[in-house]
Image (cartoon, rainbow, N blue to C red; front, side, top):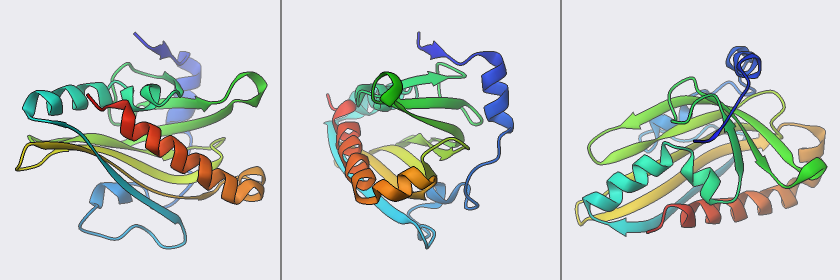
Length: 181
């Protein structure tokens, strides 16, 4: 069981507007390009082999496991990712923790592809979207791909620019290790 958002906080986030216009753009990958005017990220990691590894990875992913496995704290409206679910993802400790409110914009549930994308809400230090996708390839390799587009969403994130990108890359590598079996 995971930490749950209070009902009034979940309702507030569900009705908050996204902080960017291109909602759902990561879900169109790889058939279309990510939106211009953003920093793009596309990383893939081999995390296992075979159907059991794939099924396990998707199950953990859809329980916010990639974020928690990367050392982030997640307080969500539901224990399982679903379209419209909201969460506050935190990195850091105490007063220094950065809070990042997000809402799930889509879930992928196919025989060899599973995952979800979420978008940023007011209060998130960035503006944009991130997709977490587990795939089972024809040769049995299980991969986790993280695809994102983002740009500064506050004066503080704009000021820390390169440091923010460094943190994003570090967290993305941790995501890659989070589902590895």
